[in-house]
Image (cartoon, rainbow, N blue to C red; front, side):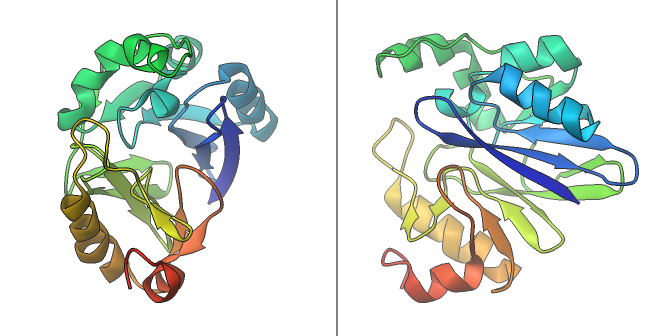
Length: 206
């Protein structure tokens, strides 16, 4: 599995390129900004994008959807509960003094128990609401991409519309912790961590 992390945009959201080494098929998770940077990285890795996956609908994670879809033709996937946010990306970004293009609508919605396959890799979709109603995590062999649900030593904000602290804590403890202590957690901002590290050390979860 090829995993490339790119911190994009003024809020430094993590965009992930995940590719199959055998087929050179890839997904782009959370292209929040800097489409040219993402596309250049894909070209350098000689990867073809099958899906654009949004872990949730906040502007800093979907802001380059339009450019990425135009350039690759890949389908946009998001949870149904966050799909409506794609229509309001520009307005949401302006509240932070930024300007981001609205996203095209989702080509497909995904939810708990769905599988996303590209090349030899399959992601299991886990619904992890709390930061947003339609937050999802993507689990594969030994790794999970969690969007803004969980961070190194912290958790996602729950003061945005649709956020809920108790729901988020339940998502992390009931959906992510059972994946196993050795699973590497790729977060929406900042460095990766492991499930075990956050069980032991995260002040919100101890």
